[in-house]
Image (cartoon, rainbow, N blue to C red):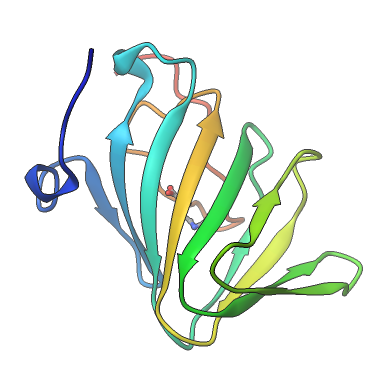
Length: 128
Ligand code: 9YT
């Protein structure tokens, strides 16, 4: 059994910061769960273009408000209780109207150090 508290992960290599968000990775590939599990704080007023072409991601909002815009311009409001699942590797833009706290699940699991490239893509890492 794995038991850990996020407070023990802040400031370690499991916390990855970008200009627009901070992701603390509670479960990673080497935890052998078949997915990775992150808490992502999205900073207020930011807009982030994202395309997880190598991963599926589900995102559940537990704090804050914002919107997700699909490539065709369709927009969806996000508030606590909203989940979105990028089941088609959907290109999207995420806008945070306030500080948003999101729980994010990735399949395949991230190894740990991944951060977005210029297209908002994570590479498919296979080894450390
Ligand atoms: C909501 C979102 O996708 N933000 C980017 C960071 C990502 N969720 C992560 O690595 O935790």
